[in-house]
Length: 97
Image (cartoon, rainbow, N blue to C red; front, side, top):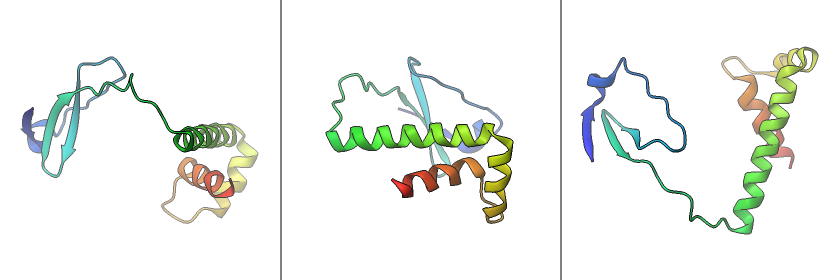
């Protein structure tokens, strides 16, 4: 694994998507370049499948509310300062179900 100092890559942005060769992970002040994980052989348990499906539904719900200006404004009125609408919508959905 290659080790870099966080300062040396401070102004560099990393974008990635599945199929890339390396992933940059930040641990404290160090940045480590590692091989992209191969998740093709993973078999999710039924409980994990349920949780992933629920989170996917929560994301869809949050996107739907974010697109509707009326619903979004009503929700933003309930938000505490410093909280983000999208993440709070996901949290609200996950707590309901």
